[in-house]
Each structure stands twice: as structure tokens, then as C-alpha cells.
Image (cartoon, rainbow, N blue to C red; front, side, top):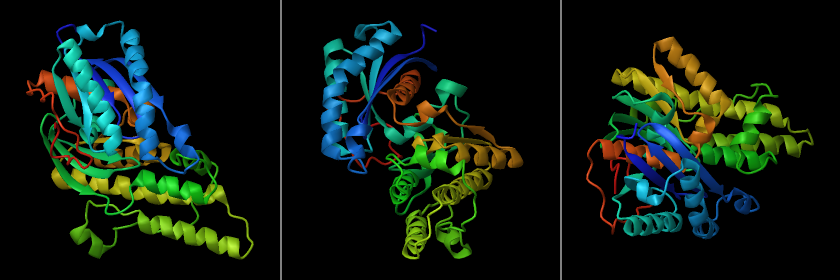
Length: 347
């Protein structure tokens, strides 16, 4: 155990300050300071508010992680930090802190890709990732299908959202239904009490769309369809069946996500599917993905819910993988990139 890399990871791409400590594939600490309540009254994340929250939470969150793991900063082998993609100001806070800690402790630093980290976190629960694997990453900012041939450097984008990400659609529909922000958990809870009775559209699934957008996603039209359905009920004075709308909307999203993910596995002859990102905590996407993977003999790997949302553990997990693979550390002057492509695992 002690020969495996001990890495501290820092995640500040959006509204959660995450600090994780990992030795190899073993999670030693996972501390998160969320600013979600500060954004709730705006119905979405405010970048300036998120950046200030990261600045205030950074030092105490790092200290909590070190205390939980029972180590000091001098004990770690390397420091990993999310360099992109994400909110520009939020990324700057995390990278600046990581540079300061690396310089003070004389440790190498790795600037890593947020999306690749969402794949790497699965290794903390299920062990080394079979390569190749297909990864479905779904969150408030991303809906992507990736082929992972080598987590240390060979990640190929297969498809992505062309408009709203899945998590973004959950937030917008939740607001339409009078449910709280963020919208994923309350829609999931409401859907359990509802029936799938409204035939909401499945974006980019028509035969003509599959020619050019076989592995791409679109949720803007679905969001609009839900809004028009709700507005039509309200105009006639009929009550809006919130639970049924939530169940029908959720089914439309999960149907498309899981169908395209399994299709990507079959098309590429890949037998492992990993699902990550905040929407991966949704109970329906987990159940439907398992059902479809079982049908086709595909192994499904989904981290436990608290590892699906943004956290420092995922950054530390990727950092540990990079150290073990002998990847050259980044420069102390490593940049941030709010639009960092998935083809770059490290900055």
C-alpha cells in the first residue's frame, strides 16, 4: 500500500470546493464545501459567487482532508488540481491554491482534466479500469460519450451535447415545476411518485439524426416541450401533475443517454461502460443502464452517488493514476483552460 502514490486533489471547476486524498485506488479523505445554497436564489450558479466561496473554503477544506487522512502536506507524493474545463474564475482559485501548496511543500503538480477525473473516480470503488472502456459523463455542464483507451493520455470524444447538458435540463425543468435548485435530486424524488404517461420527445434519435449525430445529445427541445405542456395546462386552469411530468421528463433523458451509451459500446466492441458526473446519481439512469447492459453482456460501472458529483477524490484518483504511469508533472506556471478539450488529460 505504502508504495502506491499518495496524492492530494483539489477540485474547483464549479460551485463545490473539493479536496480528496488518495493512495493508489484507496480513498483516504473526501472533503467538500458546497456553495449551492448561495446560488439557489438565483436558480443557477453565479461564477463570481462561486469563486469567492472557493477562496474562503480552500484552506479549511484542505486541512480537514489532511486531518481525516491522518497525514501532513509533506507526506503526499504529488498534488493534482482541476485545470479545466469549468468556470474561469473558479478554476483560477483552485489552481492558484494548488501551486502555492506545491511550492511550499516542494511537491510536483498535475493540472488535470475535469472530465477525465470523473472517469478516474470509478477506480476508487471498482479498482483499475479495463481499457478500452466507454464513458458516459453527464452533469450540469457536460453530456459526453468518450472512448477511454488509456486514462493517462488516450481519451477519444465520440459525442457530446449540441445544446443543453442533461443536468442543465434537469435544473430548468425543476424550475418550471416549482422544485428547488439543483433540479436533479428533487425531480428524481418526484418521479418515484409519478407515472410515465407523457410522450416527451427524444432528441437526436430520428433516423436522419443518427447519420450525423449518432452519439450526440440534445435536450433543449425536450426542455421546451415540457415547458409548452405545462403552460398549456396552466392556460386551461388544469392542475399540473408534477410527479407525472417529472417521471416522463426523466424517462426521456435517461432513455436517450443509456441507449446511446450502449450503442457506443456495441459499435466499438467495448465491453465496459462507466457512467460519471452528477446526473449519474439519478436512480433511473442507473436502473435503465443496468437493464440494457445486462441485455447485451456489457459490464456497467457507476460510482456511489457522492463520488458522482464534483469532488476532490476524483482529481486525486486521476493524479494517482498519472503518477503511477510515470506521466511528467506539469509546470508550476501551468495554465487554466475553461474550455479544456477531453483529448488533453493534463494541462
